[in-house]
Image (cartoon, rainbow, N blue to C red; front, side, top):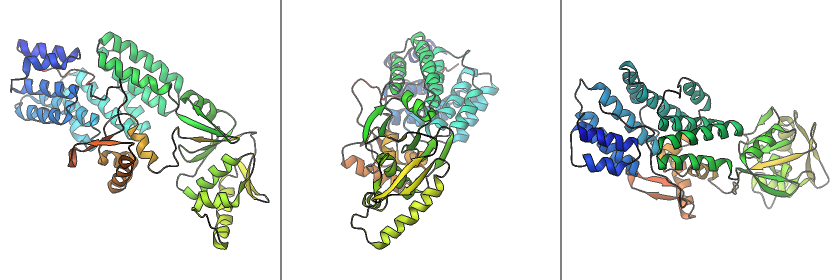
Length: 408
């Protein structure tokens, strides 16, 4: 490498994209194009970054397979940052294989870590944990160790293992301080805030209060019967009854849980389950059928019995029945879409449809409705259009590549 390329790569490694651009902004050789692409990505211009990285990959000759593979890895990270989950997994796997074959262990680990981050993003936690177990963080540079620990923390948070998540974030903080990259420290701070932000609401005996993630973990480990409106299940310790595919039954279970220890009136149940404010005999007959189905489903945990006014829930082995709800009003439409956008990153509608396992048209309707309500905003047009929640002051939403792309 010539001296300018070396200096630009070192600037990127130190988190100084402007310093890198000062050295290679006017150059069009492949190495300079790759470094310019990474610099633009760190500055948040993901569209320009993708163009530059593709130009660099094409410009490298057939004998420069390692350099091309590094460009593919960098482009994959740009795709991940822009929530383009349609980036070909085969291309990333091929790049990892090339880097591993040629002994570039750092960038090979980076490629595998990107794959794990994608799996985490779409909710495939088991696959993410298996892939992550193959990555050993100790030989990695500090910036990549930070990224590794943030993934560990992300999995722990989703598994409701708050102690493990805090330990991983502490390790990430130490690695970020060692890396001396301010943007990386900001990412760690943002991840840490998740543990200190209300994660759910507890509704019990007619009262509601906010819960931190550690409180949710303790609640689910307790002996209480929990009507979990975050996962649409009813659970007590390790006994779980899923109602995710039975929305009517879950609506009834939640209404009974919110009314406990009192009963829920038939009119209230009809309104919650069927939206029937003016019920007739057919509605009441259907309610009896659905209550019978709910009683059969909940038999391992509780009984549903009739009262003079309606129905009530009685737990078998617990003195407490509570409802665990989302921290915001999840009764509003499109709450699941809003929950994904709450990470502060920009998402495409196609990426949201993959993550939610829903049609893109359904997701687009939800986004339009949320935009009209002022809860989300978009930028770009056509395929480049991205959606995000309005960013909070002091929270960075720009891409930070966790490792430089060395050009040897």
